[in-house]
Length: 188
Image 1 (cartoon, helix red, strand yellow):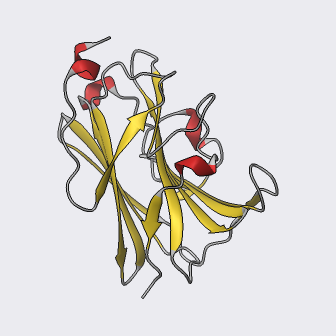
Image 2: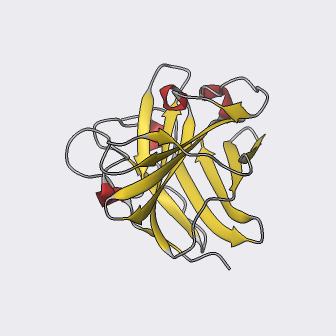
């Protein structure tokens, strides 16, 4: 176990959740991942803070904001929103500014690109000890929902860890409803 993993993680601030790494995919240098979701007049504002020296992270190169598939293959922040059993939405946010949005009719089935009236806005900052990714989305939610917040973190040494609010049994699986434990209020 590396020193980074052995050190205690700072407590998440009010309104934030501390994500936990899947036990089968421990991080090498990442100390913590915090996530928060807030309602704003524009929709949902999500913030992810990855506690790790930024030179030890793989941060995809900046691109023009656009929809893209396969973002989870490298550092990627995700939001899953239960829209009614068994359907759910999946949003992916890359530090590159690329994003994806999908609709599922059931667990990992019926996947389709979800049209968005407004593309997500992704902002990234780094202070040397942490990478901060903020995403603003205007999802098509009309009622209170339950969500899963998750992250795939790729490190420069090749380590890939999978972080979520909660993990079900078996390999990492952010689609597993056992990880949908954050309450999202209905839009104003």
